[in-house]
Length: 286
Image (cartoon, one colour):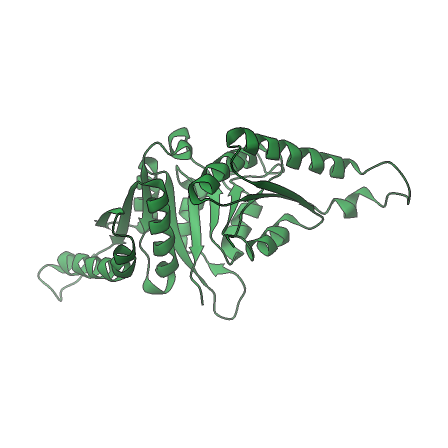
């Protein structure tokens, strides 16, 4: 059975944008869509007397949010199967639990309670850093959100963080029928006397790592139009800059040893806060 695509909704504009993006994504992959609203409203509204017809205002709002989000999804694509749920839990815990039976989690860049001007909401960051399935934070400019660039960008990481991200990227490119740009950033130390051309050595190592990382997935998806490249510079700057010409940027993450959650490096943090298109964080299975 195909796992659903799960979207966290709260009625905010970013969450509605996430719903739109997720509908299109579900249609591409032939998946159902599950819209989830989570809040600890029971703790703050107080107990409603037994037998009372009055419902807590937060519950009424939650029902309105999921219903209107579902209607929005159906208007966008009536062929996508949509289900909804309201969970009396904190949003992060609820979405992490949902992620255990999801193909991916989709969240907006900020929530209803986010501070104005905040680049990334706390729920989105926490879910991206701790989920066991891919998490897509929907953000960026109109072109990136609409998918008009017809290209996906993969930041090629280390072998212990990049395998699942590579497979995710190839599946996305195949489903969209678009170009897959794979970038491995490299940097040459300012002082290195062991070689006449130290920069060339670093670039060659980056090319070798790129080939090793892509080999298996390239064989499994021969129809994907692949454009691998090595670029000198800090990975976070290279990928943020290139996200302006992408419809989705993908990076991998690994679980921390002896700790819950993932290890999100500088590159993932920079993309989650500054990318000009949606960002997928794909955990490496352990």
